[in-house]
Image (cartoon, rainbow, N blue to C red; front, top):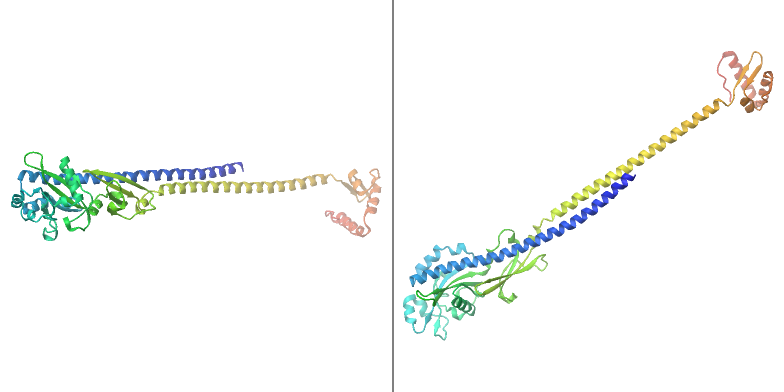
Length: 410
């Protein structure tokens, strides 16, 4: 019983240890999942920065070509954009545009250099300087009416980016814009602008603008398990809903993990609001903790079954021992009674002479005086018989004497 009790204690201890191990494993898996989530959020921000740098490099290459050539025809510009495979390399790519600085004083010369786009600058501004789009590819709907001639200075978001590129001589990221120039509507987008320097000196004479559809650009950032994340991209430091640039997935108010990442590039900031989704959280290997609980429960159950079997075997062994002890005691009692009964008394009857010798115990049982003469014992013994039993006893005595059969009288 003592060993079984110990096994019960071991089983209970194992069960408690299993629960503690499950809690520790669950906490570890949760912490690991949160670390993986933060790593995925960091990866999103890093991909965005790297992709913006690649776009800026492509725009800078185009700006360098224009600086060296001085001018470029519309077909040559379209061929350049096509050979760079910008749409394949950069998901969300909409157009690569060249805008040129035009003053009222040199408008005629600029028109001769760049064509009709300079003569149709839109919207008509007060002057005296403009930055109209003179080349763009691919052109929307097969023509350039919504784009060519559009003055980048007329759009505040583009104007801020142009000013940053001019002052820093580096790539600039615009705030949220609408595609297709002055259409005033369209998909949320942004532009990466690179200054075009004069052939001699550092004066900015134009900009190359790579316009990107925000949603497609953001979608291209997701790889691996990060594809299951939810992301909202806010334009500017505030990170508020009015400045939302793109939404990927749905808002997850009950998300287990959420974080924010700041992406700074070209004088502008994006806020990435990243959240986990049920699909993302489903990839957490909770089964490891569950397997530990299952294994511990099975081990505890086996220990409990073993303890119960030992207790059952112990009970059966005790019952068997008790039964055997009782049987042995009964046999011992019968043997003791037999041994004691063997010495209860004896007598020897000489039927021919009519005498009987009897032991003291026999005389005591028969109620006779042990000092009687052997010839007096038989009469005295007969007198002790019950009148109703006397005939049967004497008949049994005669059978014994005549036929030498065992004497049996009760």
